[in-house]
Length: 170
Image 1 (cartoon, rainbow, N blue to C red):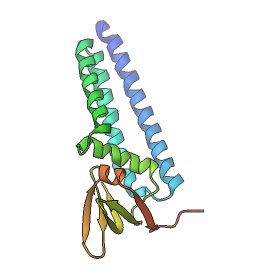
Image 2: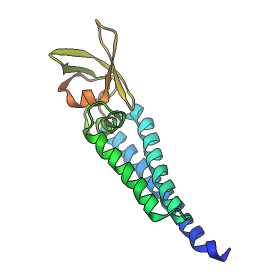
Image 3: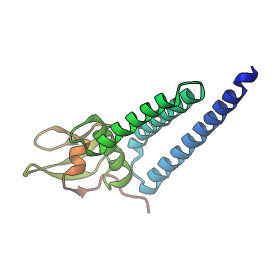
């Protein structure tokens, strides 16, 4: 038992840090929702993504604490960081759409219920934004039904908010 005392203590510290960071992340996301007064539907998805990322980091740290060689953890962490770096520059990858989802949530003025006009490939798509998921946005048009567009395409395309579905709080 004496030989594992340090590892148990480090594990407890990591678990406490996990819950503190998770709580701070939830607080930051909820403040973003309250501040913007309209992204409540996307909040649940962003919280799931935050939990996944924090759990992955916790798993890497715990494997390092409990005896996995540092070089193996370093190789794994480098691989994960490389994949995330590629996500920022990849054209149509899954990770670039998840990254675009986060950017749309935190930085863009669009929300579910808005009427938007997207200029994509020389023709405009105008309709109501009905959902934003990790990978796609769904736009309901009057003439073409529901259009599914990858988040990264929406982020790269010029668009304008034509009408607002929910009035912001004063």
